[in-house]
Length: 84
Image (cartoon, rainbow, N blue to C red):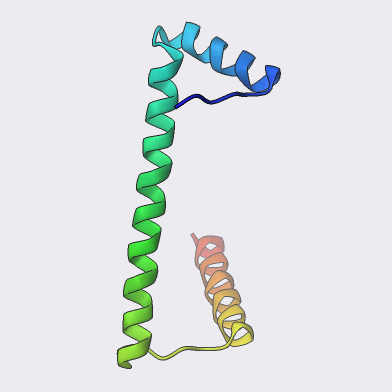
């Protein structure tokens, strides 16, 4: 496979390769592998969450309710930290 980058990206990659002492193709392979692993993990997590919803193990809440819950938890955490 052949990949082409803009000159700016190629320059960054070349500098990183020199600084790390590793060939640029190794850096790219590590980056792509990490990205693919993250995508696979995210897909598996979404599949599990869908299964949880479909089976009724968890109940969906609307976005506004989720936001209110998040803000309440954030405020409670701020208050705890302020008391310390």
